[in-house]
Image 1: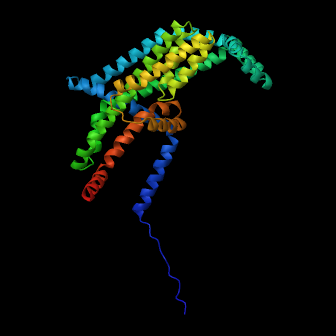
Image 2: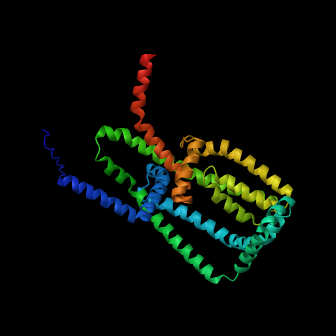
Image 3: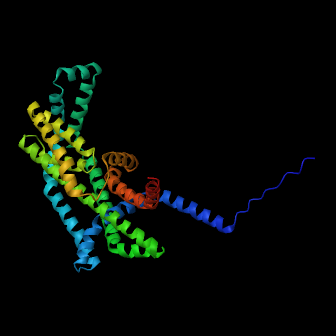
Length: 353
């Protein structure tokens, strides 16, 4: 005789339901406020980057709020000074560069091989017409300029908001850290507080070093362009500095742009610019990078490229810039989390040996 089927009851407690509902609510809130969370994340990275400077002033006897305000005021003063000094010449050179685009395209396409490729597909006339339309529409595009101005104003407002958020995070960082570690046992705090400090130091070294290296790259590009007689040296310097903010691949992209512009002057100028960029990239990789970072960010080239590709695909240029400091934090945390197991495995190998 077949036994009757057993009835299985699954009892879900009220507490489990409340936890599940709270988790779903947090996920929904994160999806809705994804842009805000991204801004908070970027502000936190900036705050960690400036925290060692503020802490250094605090150790010298400065109150932390005043040290944070002074650091941010100095940073904004430097940025505004650079904008005031370069905005006018940069805009004039951008307008002139756009006006000269059709002529540059004509000069680049003078080679027989290039003309053969473009003439068979009709791309030469299409690109030349597009460049002429771009150059002709630039002076009369008042509506476009107003739209750009509105976009710049919105970006500036977001940048100011981000700066104040980072300022408050820097000012409250010790209080936030102590509050979080207040929920942990003393042995956990003793283990992970140094990891937090190492992560902050790594982020600071990465961001400050990245900006410093980009400034050097822009200066080298601008001086090289001026010495070789390339047009729009200021534009090329600023463009190189911005591209160099992207680790590993940014310097290569900047070199391609510089050599392409040098081709409009002559083959000799292009060859000299290529040699200058190759030499500088070697100096940057083997001299400037170790000098600026000093071992604070211990990431291999492969890890850096993978981090840049993943973060860039997710967050664009901002993600590519923040990829290195975030990867450094992940490496420090994973290294500390796996330290006990690595120690046990080392003891086992020693015992067998």
